[in-house]
Length: 84
Image 1 (cartoon, rainbow, N blue to C red):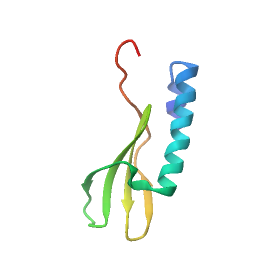
Image 2: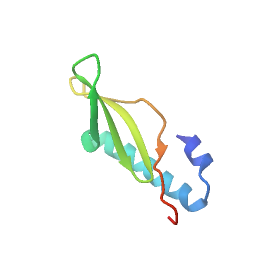
Image 3: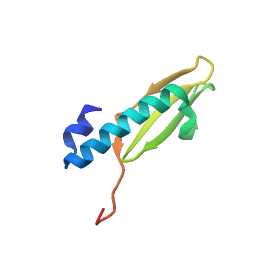
Image 4: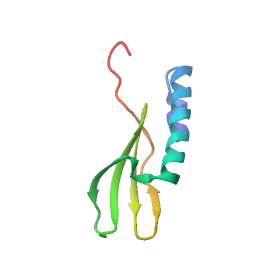
């Protein structure tokens, strides 16, 4: 997660990224189904999800049976339109 902050092009974006990471931490701890399910994995109780806390997206797996969440990749910056 620190890589995204290090690579942020502006201080304002760095602040947005820090807020986004804190939001992911809060949401994944309280209600990880806030995102969108992408597809089930080879074990039926495991589902890959994607969540957005602008300006970042995060891919994670939810194990409903054991009430676990696994972050499977570093957060990615959302694409920004020109002029944003």
